[in-house]
Image 1: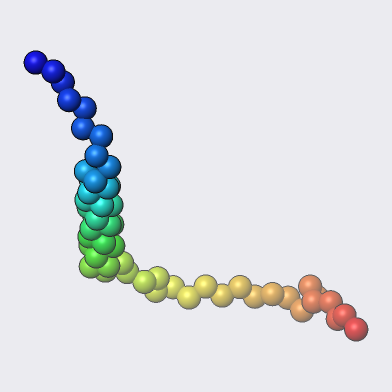
Image 2: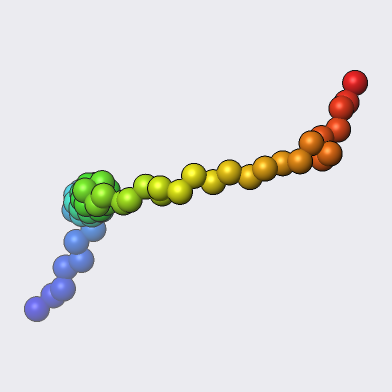
Length: 59
């Protein structure tokens, strides 16, 4: 029995396209699922008082 090495590039291109499409579908699924999660927005307003003495007038 002889072993025959298949060297067609068509099969490698098809496999590459299948793998890329699968990876893209997984990424789209992850983005879709993260979009469904409702993250709470912060309620507390952050205010910082800056004293007037820190300002410099530049002419």
